[in-house]
Length: 66
Image (cartoon, rainbow, N blue to C red; front, side):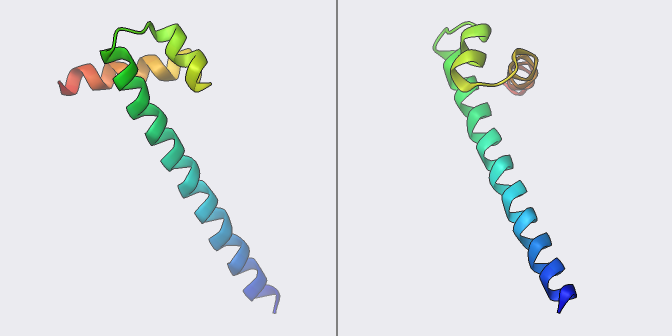
C-alpha cells in the first residue's frame, strides 16, 4: 500500500515539475518578444518576475538562434 502511495506522489511531483518547466518556457518566449519590442532587460525581468541573469541568458541564446 505504501509503495502505491509513493508512486502516486512521485507521479504528482513529476507533473508539477513539468508545469513549472512549461511556465518558464512561456516566460522565455515572452522575454524574447518583449526584447524584440525594444524593452530593456531589467524591465523584462521585473515584469516576468525572473532574475535578470536568467533573462540575459535567455536573450543571449535567442540572439544566437536568429
